[in-house]
Length: 120
Image (cartoon, rainbow, N blue to C red):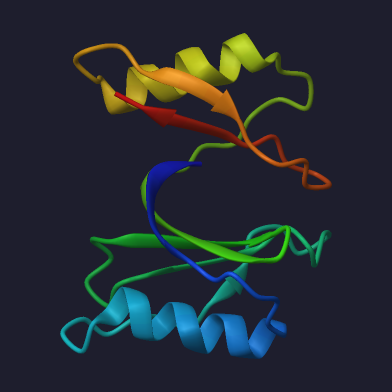
């Protein structure tokens, strides 16, 4: 997934609390959201995703060391199991088409995910 970090918690929350927090942050009182669904049914720790009622805006909720991250997803695509960091960064840069180029920083280690953060 490639997206913009919208908000984060600085403390751990239970799954239900995290989804309620993310719903308040994403909806901002104007947009209805569909129910949150696991990103990967086979992996309950994979995080959650939802879309707006009009299927326009996508949101992703990931557990993060010490809390949760809420992304406004720009795109979501399945990937092969074997992928290098350079492949992931190239794909994300193609999706975001930034000017100027992005500077990538490795994010925290999370089981089942590789996190990179970028700033222009």
